[in-house]
Length: 470
Image (cartoon, rainbow, N blue to C red):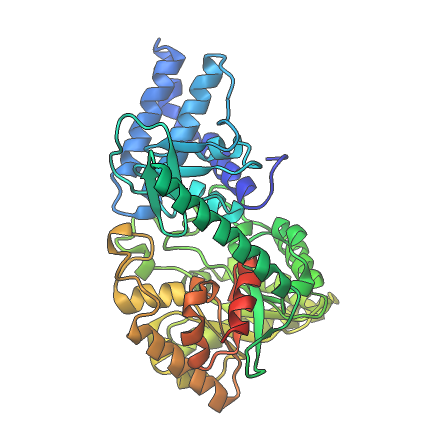
């Protein structure tokens, strides 16, 4: 964890929290006390946990099974005195699935790729691969038993086994074309995003951790459109106190140097459980106690976060965004809590400011009647959840991925409706979901009337180049 940053550190932290959970090791310790060999006891205990995760109906928990495999095998290797070894530089990692630490132990400086017969697009390895730009294809099914060469195309999601000379030529040409396109796009990184008509589009970024800021030049973007504050809330770890949160939020605000920095209040639940906060055993976590529903139910946790945010607001242009709002009362109650926190801090002589309070538009009930939420300082459309709720298709289930399409006419109609109402009511509207990071959606989003997009930092140059062609 000391050698890596960002999501890599978060993933190792997740594994460490699992290892420190007494419930995970208890069956093994008990078996060892009864005379079972340590490696047999450990493997038996973890195999039971792995089977439970793999049998889950939730894609998130099935994806975490790879972490449990990793934890099991690393402990077994240490018991056997074996060294961990990464893959050969520039190679393709092939298997049913691979462990996150196998990715971290691999030298990707000379390229390489990942091809998995099973795997998941929501696994920790997939997150790492996306962050590093490593081509990865999952769900390939059974592959031929004798393979000497694999050509992996992460853009199209295809893998060619033992390509012939003509196929190699085609693949190499595509790779060179991709590299030229990326190099050409780089000239737009530090330019304003402007359409051919001269219309200016604000390009902000989505971030999830402080370490990401070290690799992003503020001059390349117009601010932070989404900071996911849940990175501070580790599953199984103590809840962060006010001072810890304040220092983290202040870092983001000062990085912005006057540019807007939008921090989303705690958005856990659904595919982001946190033991001790999110309820256990929900039949459908995506429709359960998550986002603002959860923080309003735990106002002790919410107040701590709002106090930290109000303190950070004095250091720059901070905006606060509430997730999963469904009815106006949730916004009103959140605003009342924020006002109370500001009053408390002022009475205590602690420097603070009341930041603008906006909402995520991700529940169809809000997108259908946005006029009910005119008390919000701004709207930010969360296309990921909005799409899954409109199309009734889980965002993390590969089996219904074709239905989970943000370009569905119903989704675009709601985005257009929200943008139109925002213009008429004088409420700023942006979009911060994954849809904004895909150039293929740009024309539809701008036609819908959006002039502010918050995107993955790695896509800044590509999107600005695409906007210049519109």
